[in-house]
Image 1 (tube, rainbow, N blue to C red):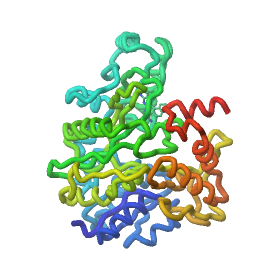
Image 2 (spheres, helix red, strand yellow):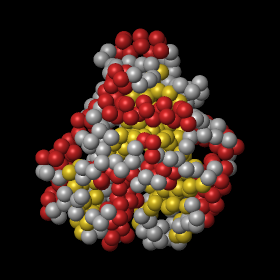
Image 3 (cartoon, rainbow, N blue to C red):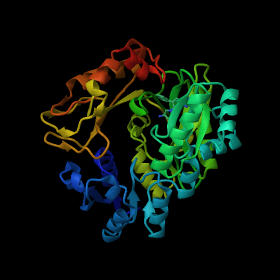
Image 4 (cartoon, rainbow, N blue to C red):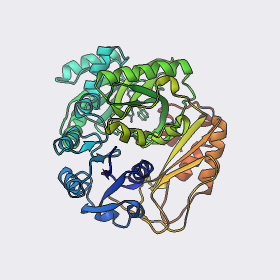
Length: 447
Ligand code: MV4
């Protein structure tokens, strides 16, 4: 097992990884930008190294700065968290070449499974259902022919895209051609790869993702699903497990499909296979996330598996200490992502200093956050303040518990999404589990 790990991330996930390291008796090195120099969690690290100015490109995204910090602090491994360099295969390769273990999947698996087009191609090869659509577009006439064949509306997606970037909807030939051009331009600029493909738009779908966990000895399990249908502009607002619409039989089937795909791609570590589930119960692969995800905590609550701890054990060459038959799901867990955004101003980010602050708590409540009264939320990174999770025997109990927790939070000095979450948790359709990927956009259209 490692003696020292560098945490190449910030905020709540840096604290989460730090806690897992401490539980494993592993020393910790935290890197931080000048914008995070007063971050409270740094005091828990054995060593904290400033790697640059606030801009992510010159700090948390700068491979040479992070690897230099790893060299001078003599760590054996780097945990990338999520976002930043967590899905950067080149970074994982540089770590390997410097004899530093990367706490995540092998680079070649990231290159295949983390690319939407290559992931789709592999899924077709191994018999995992995919959405009707195209390979990467090399000419517009072909794209028009395929879109007409599968039927409008269609989605245009960047192969190297993520978080909704390089993604467009098209309802006819004209918007298809213009959508392809703008998606190619956006993806080329954002990811250095402008390749895009077309998929039929699955109406009234649920967004169901399967958590997989594999070690370096060929063992792999799935840990059930997370229903992430409540998104606003491709940013998840609420996640829950189990999904109200996934039966034990469907869970086993989708779990097996996810494991089959990940194995075929040579994957190990924690990863998430994303599917769409249509109203007829048919599921389709859309992509794979080759990292630990923001919403991993609700899976930890219902399965009792510490995913970050397992990632570290796997990176150190240890075997999974459980089989698929050992996995049990207990109760319902729901997460709200609390962001410092202004619901009355189109959810624009609302950084600033937190005044009076009282976190939620009590039985069955988990609050994963790095913030405190007096903390300044910097404008340079994502606006997430914390992840509020609850774990109860039933979905109805979980909703009640979440409402109580949301109502007791005090965060002054910044606007947050808490009022929106309270509206969602009071909405009949959500309470009945009858929402799909259009719910949030549709909800705002009526306001
Ligand atoms: C889709 C889709 C419907 N049809 N693909 C992919 C990335 C994720 N952030 C959203 N994704 C979707 N891909 C096809 N072919 C529906 C979604 C989707 C969604 C789309 C728009 C607005 C909110 C959404 C919430 C979840 C899933």
